[in-house]
Length: 318
Length: 284
Image 1 (tube, rainbow over the protein chains, first blue to last red):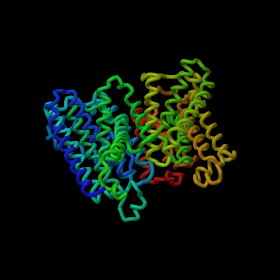
Image 2: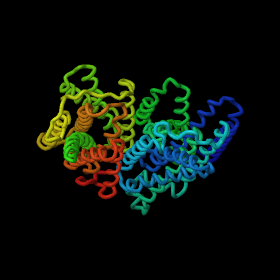
Image 3: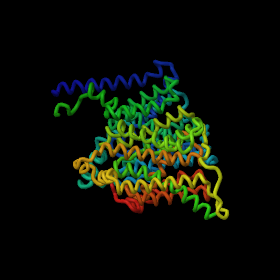
Image 4: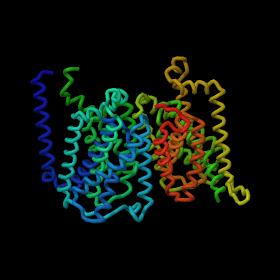
C-alpha cells in the first residue's frame, strides 16, 4: 500500500468517525424515540463493561469468569453510599471503581501469581460467594429486591444518553492509550508468552495484578453508573448470567479487538430489547453464539469487518 | 451430635470424592478445565428424576440408565465441542462454560424452573445408639466407594487403564507410541461426566433439584481437586472426605446458606499455602 493510499484511508476513517460523532450527538433530536435512547444507554453500559472483560481476557490472557462481581460491587457501593449520605455522583463512581479494585486485589493477589486455570476458577467461586451473600443478607442488601430508590444523578433520558456516551468514549480512549503505551504492551506480552516475559525481566505478577485492578476499576464504574441509571441494585448484577452475557458480547464482537466489544454489545442488546419474545431463550442463544464463534471464527464480528474494510497499517509490510 | 455430623460427613464425603474424581480425571488426563462438570451433575439429577417420578422406572435401573446416557452425552460433547478448540486453554474454558449455560437453559426449558424432589431409593434410617443414618446415604456412599475402587483397579491393571496413565504422563509420547489418544480423551471425558451425573443421581433424593444447581458442585469439585492436588487420585479422595465433613459442619454450626463460601475459602487458602495441592504435582 502506497503512502498516499494510506493517507486517503486515514482521512476517510477520520471523516467517518466525525460523522458518527455528529450522528451520536444529534440522535436525541432526530429521533424522538425514548425507548431507542434507553436501549442505546444499556448497550453503552454493557460495552464499557465488556471492554473491561476483554482487557483481561483478550489482551492479558487472564480469563475472568466472575467479572460481574466488579460490576455488582460498583452498583452495591453506590447503593450503600447514597443511602448513607448524599455524595457527589462523580466521586461516587470513582469510589465504586475503587471498591472493585479492592475486590480484584483480594482475588488477584493469591491467584494471579499462578499459571493455569486458577484465576478463572477463583473468580467464578468468589462471584458465587458474593451472590450468596447478596441473597442471604436481607437486612443489608435487601435480598432479591435489592436496594431501590437510589437518587438519579442526571435527570431525563437525554442527559443519561450523553453521559453514557461520554463514559464509552472515555473508556475507548483510555484503553487505546493504554494499549499503545509501554505498560500496555507489557500487559499484552503476558498473553503471548508469560515465561518469556519473565525471562525478559518483566515482573509478571505485579503487571497482572495492576492490569486486573484497572479492568476492575472500569467495570466498577460501569456498575456504579448502571445503578444510578436504573435507580436500583439487584443481585442479578452479581450473577453468573451477567458474566456470561459479557463473555458472549466479547466473543461475538471479537475477543482481543477492543472495538469488537462495542459491536457485540450493540448487537446483543438490540437483539434482546427488540425481539422481546426471545427473552426466555436469551442465554441459550448466547451460548450457541459463543460455541459457533469459537468453533468457526475466532476473530468475531469485528475481526471479520476489519479484514474486509479496515486494512490500514501493517498489511503492506506483511 | 458430633458423631452424627462426623459420620454423615464421611458418608457425604464418599459422593464428593466420586464427583471430584470425575473432574480430576479430565484435568489430569486431558489437561483441560471442564467447567461443564457441574451441569452434568444437574443433568444426572434431572434425568433420574424423570425416570423415577415420571417414568416409574425401578431406581437401580434408572441409576444405570442415567449413567449410560450421560456417558454418551459426555462423549459427544468431547468430540464436537472440546476437540476442535483443545489447543487453547482459554477457549476450552469458554466453550465448556458456554455448554454449561446451554445445558442449564435446556433443563430450564425442558423441566421448568420449580424446585423438585426425588423419592429416596431406600426408605428409613439406620439407628446406631442414637446416631441416625439414612439408608439412602449409606447406599450412595457404598456406590461411590465401589466405583472409586473399581476405577483405581482398572487404571492399574487393565491395558486401557495403562494407556490412560500413559496419556496422563505424556500426551505426545503416547500419541507417538500408537495409543489412540482421541479415543482415550473421549472415554475419559465421558467417564468424568458420568461420575458427576452419578453423584447427582445419588444426592438427588437428599436435596432439592433445580436448573441452576450445578454451580455449587462444580466449585466444590474444583476445591476438592485443588486441595488434594491436581491429577492425584488419593489427594482427590482425601479432599472429598474433608469436604464432606466441612460442608456438614458449616451447615450445622453456621448456616446452610454459607455452604458456597467454604469451597472458595478452602481454595484460596490452599493456593496461598501450597498452590500445587497437598498431594499433587503442578501440571500447568
